[in-house]
Image (cartoon, rainbow, N blue to C red):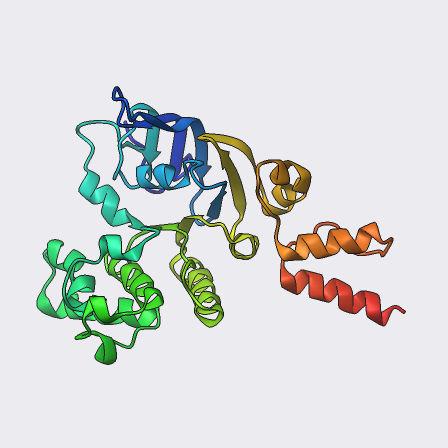
Length: 293
């Protein structure tokens, strides 16, 4: 029996997940080697790891795009490896935004692309228009200005926003994001992060994201998993994970700029917090330090 949407247990539970591309061929490539992961309702979980560590493969299991070859993925109690699992329902609840937005934009016009999902839900014309307008405006694309724009004419940042709008139009409970701020300028990155925080709070939504940008994860995530060569080698809250700077460096990973600055100041004997992980926290520490002198 599967757990109900409001039942006990995590919203997403991954146990001993293995996945190999081109299995049984000369091109076989192991992507995941026994990964465990849990995501509670309403939290934001971040994935970090070197390129090729399995982050994207893991994310694609979280809405049934990939099915487990070995191990188990349960979404609110539903086993995605079960041949009887209703993957369409799972994918409406768990929206996946790819690392390369052009991979999921296939309509000629921007408005039609966002409308694709709601049309497949069998909604009325007015409901579709309402959802498309809401989703585009939510990600900062003016509906009137962009609905008839050719998708191929959009900038990378605009395509990324449009891909996100197409997922939002399905009204998902979970957003799964692969490098969501890649290709965005500083203003676009700041706006998208602020929007994700607002969406999580207003919709009581759940977010799982992979990113190479440690500042993004320090600002957004409640918990982090570090993936290396298909294995989860470290997990915990961001302060705990980023405090292991030497371990992360051994895997070729950096810590947020704030962590590096605080460690440098402490190395010079200055009394600043060792666990500051955001720019705002580091700035507050430096201001306090200056005012005390």
